[in-house]
Image (cartoon, rainbow, N blue to C red; front, top):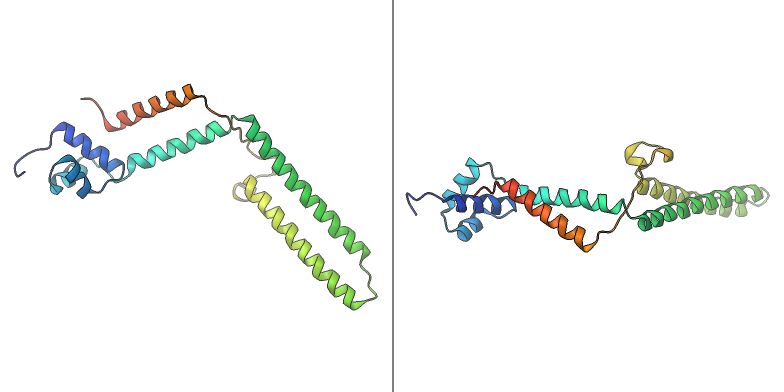
Length: 180
């Protein structure tokens, strides 16, 4: 292929394949141009490996979060689960407090066993509270329970899915500069 230039269609194919993560060798075979042509086109057009794939994944993640935040059934299920977790930690705290109050200081063996049981209960409580903080994002965000963001989750109809796919195809064509 010495002395031949890649056509506009081949350049677009090279950029698109590189954008979705194909190697230069695979692109060369698929498009029918030399490896050096692929490398030159990629360099000239700053076509980095996997850029489009990464953007599509990010876009899909944002759309999924947006869709999930509008479904009241899932939001209610999450709220119910968090309420159950909070109630379990409250019950554990109450049981620990009750056990401490009933602790007899007369029998050293009883005291040692009781302290071991209390230590286990306190560890379970700490773990449950840590899981709750992680699940709500409080640990990462440094926010209080009153400031928690609301996650609304909503399902999509078949028409909405079709519309989203059309929008994604348009966005992908715009990214590729489909002006042919």
